[in-house]
Amino acid sequence: MLKCLSLLENCSSMKQLHQVHAQIQVSGLHRDPNIVNKITHFCALHPSGCLSHARLVMTHSSDSVLSSWNNLIRGHATRCSSREVMWVFVEMRGHGFRPDKLTYPFLFKACAAISMLKEGEQIHTDVVKSGLDSDVYVGNTLIHFYGSCGKIGDAHKVFDEMTIRTVVSWNSIVSACVENSKFRDSVELFFRMRDCGFEPDEATMVILLSGCAEVGNLSLGKWVHCQVIEKGLNVNCELGTSLVDMYSKCGDLYCANLVFERIIVRNVWTWSAMILGLAQHGRAMEALELFKQMKNNGTKPNYVTFLGALCACSHAGLVEDGYRFFRDMQYVHKVKPVMAHYGAIVDCFGRAGRLTNAYTFIKNMPVKPDAVIWRTLLNACNIHDVNDYSGVGEMVRKSLLELEPRRSGNFVMVANKYAEIGMWEKVERVRSGMRDRGLKKMAGVSSVQVDSSIHRFFSGDDFQVAYNAFTIGVSINAYLAIGLTRVVHIATYELIFPPGRFKVTLTPPLNQTSGTQKLPLMHT
Image (cartoon, rainbow, N blue to C red):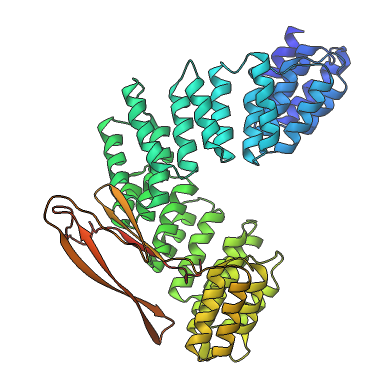
């Protein structure tokens, strides 16, 4: 027995495991629970492990143990086979085994992966009944599960009721807040974490940086970077990539490149973050050059890398190069395209004014195009309408309104185009369709970052702030360009600011005040 266990322990491939397993079968020990447990452990956790072989061994074992079932569940969970996890769990319960504190975390991980809220809540009930709700490992995965399913209130409840917390517990609730766009809460939890005596680690910083990138808060992102330096944290590949991603998404490509150059060991995500950042900010040739460097470095591109390359080709007008990247991605690198890749090719054709090519590409897609792809082409049709000899724009407008009949922005976009070319009957028809559906035009929103706060302003807002006796009145004339030929005056707003709060700062190019505008006419 000990010799067999030792042989299994020293296996380094499935081929060796099969050979040892054959010897064990000859000896008659293949049904022993300890042997079965060793085999399932290897099949579940080793990079070359085969779960179907583990399942076969379990089937022929009349006396399995709970740890073998846990190995099987863990193996499927780490391979993101969530449905298989649940089937194994049901089968395990059918054999009379009760899950323990090692089973539940992988069940919650599987439920979180594909948002199986109902199943996860049922399992949570079992956890409470079994008295394992006080286990810190189970609690951490419960927080992650509820956060992934959008139940941030339940995630907070689990966290607040935990009697024992670790850094992972704090990271889990901070991550849940970031994932559910509760960014202010995540920052407050970060300070609470330190006040409670827990030192943030690299994972904490990665989570906060992802939140900064999501909302475009550059000043807070820089503050997090300062915390990393101040605490002497190891800027490993993951943390370095998060810094590059944050700076890129916040528009500070200078700092993004500084961090990128200082990362000694880079993986495909590091390269992809920098390439995509350059591409999305119009520095197409630099992005493509970096793509070439990455391949020369021996790093195999993934779907994000190719998205960056396609985006770069679109900005640079390199239509043929973009289509070549798209083909190579599928047939050379065996990367399956997702909707974003198809959208990038449509954008590439559209920016070049090749509307018929874009429309034909969409109609030949192996997957059903979503509304974003149709809006991308419609935006191109609005810009290049002089090239629209085949009536592509009209077909796109029809497809978009049929696909999303409840989205007011689509109707506004179509009505504005008809108004621009003087087709007033169609304008009224579109507006009538909006009224019949009870739709209203969405207000445009602008956001500006002042110090560490992001302020949002909607068209039609009435600000009346009174502090002390002094105020500053500022008249802002808002204009919205429609198409390339018409400019429509929207409104004049009187904004009242308290003294000391209204500042106009002239800054160097690399330290700009961040401001964004989101209008309902945008195609994304």
